[in-house]
Amino acid sequence: MATAGSASSSRCCLLLLMMHLVIAAATLVGAAAPAAGSSADRVLLRVDSLFPGPSSCTSTQERKPITATSSAARVPIVHRHGPCSPLAGAHAGKPPSHAEILAADQNRVESLHHRVSSTTTGLGGKPRTKKKTPGHSSVPASSSSSSSSVPASSGLSLGTANYVVPIGLGTPPSRFTVVFDTGSDTTWVQCRPCVVSCYKQKDRLFDPAKSSTYANVSCADPACADLDASGCNAGHCLYGIQYGDGSYTVGFFAKDTLAVAQDAIKGFKFGCGEKNRGLFGQTAGLLGLGRGPTSITVQAYEKYGGSFSYCLPASSAATGYLEFGPLSPSSSGSNAKTTPMLTDKGPTFYYVGLTGIRVGGKQLGAIPESVFSNSGTLVDSGTVITRLPDTAYAALSSAFAAAMAASGYKKAAAYSILDTCYDFTGLSQVSLPTVSLVFQGGACLDLDASGIVYAISQSQVCLGFASNGDDESVGIVGNTQQRTYGVLYDVSKKVVGFAPGAC
Image (tube, rainbow, N blue to C red; front, side, top):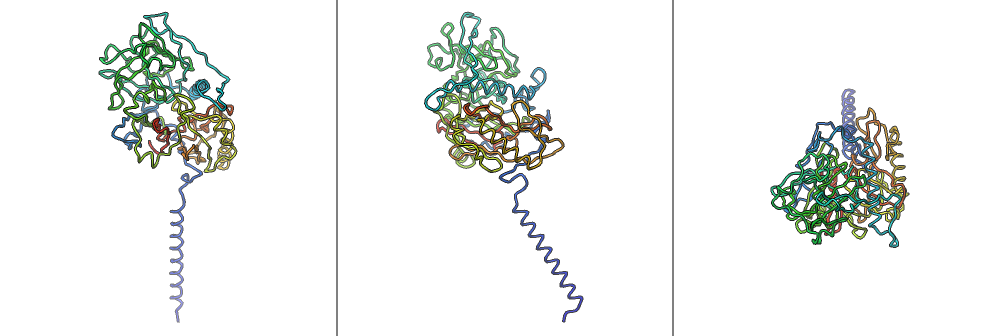
């Protein structure tokens, strides 16, 4: 017969055993449950990450390239106004305000829409028309022939093509910091002599007289006919580009050795600008990554197979990369999801088939797939804010706002083209609904937290999308939404791909 003491001892042992079981069960449940912000419908965002310090610069260059092959060439990408930029501190006055950035972004989009409407065939074989049509103009090409002029092709506004890369040009090579742009074909730099004027840049002007491999392109050269706008001066080919914001560059179409990382591309054709004016932000010029015949993509096709990739960092205080070279089987077959490149839609741009949008892990059923197929979609490195057909944007904004309201976040006033904004004052982190863009072939761009919103201030953080104002204008996947992804372009295989966590 058990004594009272032994009975009490048994009860204590039983209680301890039950407590251990409860603790163990709780531990197992905790281990199995997803961490806050890592589920399919929510993602955590540190609010202070939206506002990097003015002097901090974080390098991501040690990460393994997602397309690493023996024939790849890689250079760093930085935001031209960020602390990692070689142009930092070089601009006169302060960096552009958010109002100026978004106004320039709208200018670029309207210019891009104009170019698309003039080169893209819509349904039924009829060219698409646009409400705004920037005019073309002629600008003098050279002081040596003041009567010569080139009908400058109307291009894009460069005000928001805000990521820059280093290149070398000439023999021996001179180093330049240039904008890289998937929406442009012709590469150009400012050159000596400046016939009328050159805008202020950080690097020294390229001097053709100091390069042993420089030569002007002849008017009889077939490459001269590849230019969107060309002219002729004493047998030498002239080029001219006028951008949507009124900026322009005019000069001789030339060839020389282009240096990209450790590689030398001999006989590369580019614009040697002798008359340049505009809002180019201290850069030396532009590197054109489009699909046209004057782009580096096509000119260096034999070397790189028409393939390149880039990764834009989550913050302006970090570095990404631009890499040329064929995609490795491991990257394109595992973490990189590809979608067909729709090359029949028109030249230069990288068209893709957007088919849907997910918010909080759920497909937005209010958007018929025909909305995307009728307007078309392209991926652009120079547009900041992704533009959507009005029907698609309305559905996205509504779903995002409902998810934010359910979490109790306070709304804020609209800002410029951004109309779905929130006040995060006093918050160290927020839980955002996930946003994903779904493409033909099953490729999916699950946006990084930094790519879901655009921050004006802590009291005004907005959904980083905007409406085109109609359902006919082409949609654009902008660079805010591309952050941290390896964005892959393979002209030979006709695919565009997205690889998460590349920088």
